[in-house]
Length: 112
Image 1 (cartoon, rainbow, N blue to C red):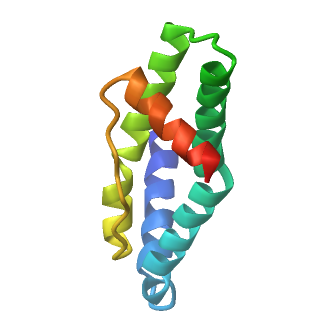
Image 2: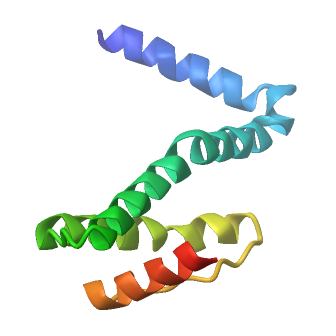
């Protein structure tokens, strides 16, 4: 098994540092990361946001579910400045310290 790992490490190194791929590896890596963010990551955050708005709208304010969603969104959205800095983009980030603030922001988003 160790020989297999060694072989894999050699192949990855060869792929990343050969004369041709060396010029394109970082660009391809950014493209791949962006595709992942667009196809999977952002839609999942939108789904969590919609779920939270539905909980707030129906009056079924399950505190546990709202706190879980709020914590996920805060945690994940706090990573966006780092992601965006790599691409020279500055997002407008907002922190929600309470469910009341989150509900107010969700209402504003829904009305726009």
